[in-house]
Image (tube, rainbow, N blue to C red):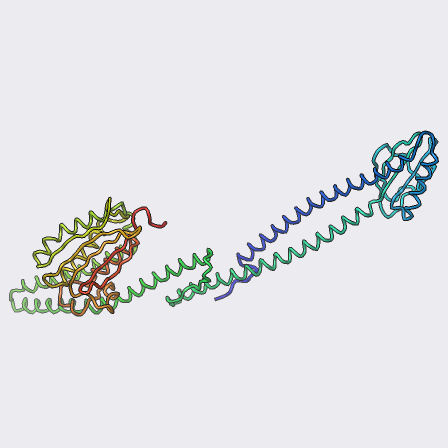
Length: 458
């Protein structure tokens, strides 16, 4: 089987999509954070410039400008690299002190672009101007520290974006490869099944995730398919084996009738015997078709709410006298409290199922056998049981009796086609019920365990 390329696989594409969405969200959130930080740094710079202006302007008292000029010159000398600029302009526009000549600026905050007259070319400045007496004081501070902080943040954010992108893609590829391996396992199993390996099953990890759940359901479907295919093989073999005798017998009867007809003898007995044999063969095929119809689930459309207690009562009324005439006894035992056990199902099929079980007990048990019908509640389940104290079924043959046309050696001399219990199992499976053969020592119990109405899983 050709493996799917990782880059073309759906899990990888989904992982890559989510990784890109995550990176995009990270970039957008980073941009928002950067804008907030830039605004905060700008506010802090404005506050620093305003505070410096206030400190310098506070040295001016009355008409005495000497202290103001000295303070401006002192601050200008401390900023040899011109991180800060100071300018004190007189009323005539002449510079009285400072390390640059301020252009004519409006009162308040201004931005001095790099390269302007008297401004260093490396960076711009944030300036604050205002009157001090008859003079104009301008204090400016460059954007170098702010720009350096923003550069560091941008570089860190860029590296973080690259790292997160790499981790997201690598992690997505790793997770996608694990998922893809499991999907490849499912595909390989289905290819094996299509090639005829009906025992192939999807390996489960046991972690209970959605892929495990789907794989488990596929395995259950494959189990069912394998059972049906094996059943069909068994049916084919059983039909060839069990119907060969009646067909040969029918052929011999017809050949005898032909010979009698040639010699002008009465052939009415041969025709009656042939009709009996053909009727038995037709009955067998009708039962097989009925089982196939039930297993296909066609009867589920007829499901209604059924009171299983009422079905048991009906069976008891029908077969009580039949059992008595045959030297056996049929009784009912109930342990249900309150309303009878209600289930979802097909009343006609449920009646046929219990009737088959009772008829099997009547047919294969000796006189004096006690047959019991019971209905009981077990947790959220309703259990119907047909039990007897007859010879029972050997433990090694209890599963085989559910196979189509299978008959125990001791039962081959009695009427029947070997389809009764096959039909019982098909009806039980259709209703989601579990069927169990119980050893009563002596005797046999057949328990059919139904989900009670309202508890069936979706």
